[in-house]
Length: 183
Image (cartoon, rainbow, N blue to C red; front, top):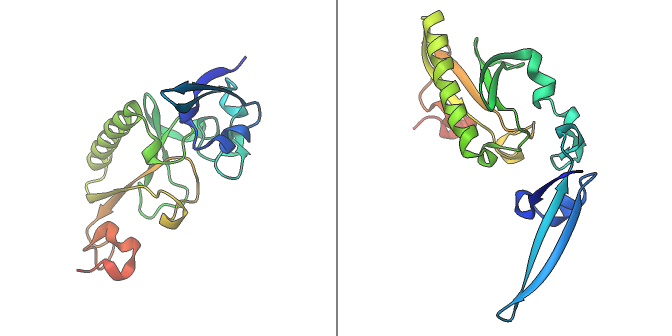
């Protein structure tokens, strides 16, 4: 038996109906002359059974789902974990990843946002205590393909920075559009 979630947890009705094991129940009422439709969605209980992202791949194929990264976890704060980035741009580059499969930062719930903030602060303290060459940080996330997101499981980059690690650091994250970095 699946768990019932309100329909609004999904992007659209076609997304819900294309997830294996999902049943959509629709009840239409008439209120003051307007038709109002309530949707309930039956979702399987295990994350491994849920589909993810636009490609409809199973979560077991998601490289950032908890079951696939639990052996790489370097720190944890309740609903989120930290792992080392496989393609670091600096020594100590970490990713903060929610345990729950969600597409991007804007999908984090309040608990996940709070846990993310707490974990980032703990990691910042740990990094600066162990590596005195760290003089700054970049924190960022890519949301959507046009912004460079390649894995559609939310993750936040924590990138330690050091004096001289780039010849022109001014503009920092503005460098995602190179001609806008210097100002």
